[in-house]
Length: 297
Ligand SMILES: C[S@@+](CC[C@H](N)C(=O)[O-])C[C@H]1O[C@@H](n2cnc3c(N)ncnc32)[C@H](O)[C@@H]1O
Image (cartoon, rainbow, N blue to C red; front, side, top):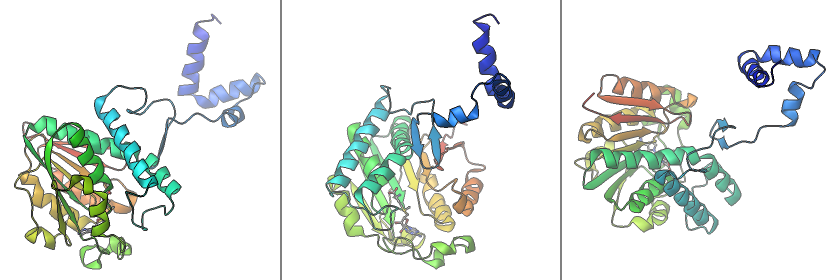
């Protein structure tokens, strides 16, 4: 076979008809599948249910400014976990420091998207004073990333945080979610305030159960970015209803639980909510969903 055609045929066969490539190798007496598993591919990213092998994530080998800012914040929070100036609840997936660092490395795509989405919203809405809100804060990990990146971009902002900082109650859960009753029993507002002490003066802590707490909380009149991570569908729907009309075109709503198989009810309420609303919804392999509000569409 002409030498330059050979690799093209080989590549096409591997991609389009891998069984035929395998059979051909066996006939030619060459090693096949076993060789592949003996030399496993190098992972460029692994975690949160995703594995990539041949593509680099945004923060590797690129010069994109959001990705580089994200990486600095990621390294900073890992340092704080190591020196215990950022403390997580015991109910987080890992109790020991090395397990927590492993988890942060697995969460890199998630936190990159947090950083990207707030910078997108800030640039698209062009508002001078940026208001943001998070429903479901726990120890303040996402709040840390979002406020750090706003500081790096020199934005003036206020961050409204909503959480019960108490165990989840069955009153706010639908039947499929009842197994989550009691989750986050060790969440602590004092610890979260300590974790977020760099942002004193820019953070408003609203403690209480959504939806009830929304009536009495200190809430922004308008906001450009909303993160919902409540592990429950009814409070998610009510938070969307409460905040959506306060958000100008260009704003972003980031939904953490959207595509997790265990949170189908949340996905259903989110899909129903955005069905006829102006903007575009994007679903990520991290399980996050993002709504880019655009009233010109
Ligand atoms: C997954 S954690 C949030 C993690 C946080 N977004 C982060 O990325 O660091 C979910 C939080 O939502 C809180 N939560 C659940 N249901 C709630 C409700 N109905 N009202 C207020 N907080 C609630 C839990 O107590 C818990 O702290």
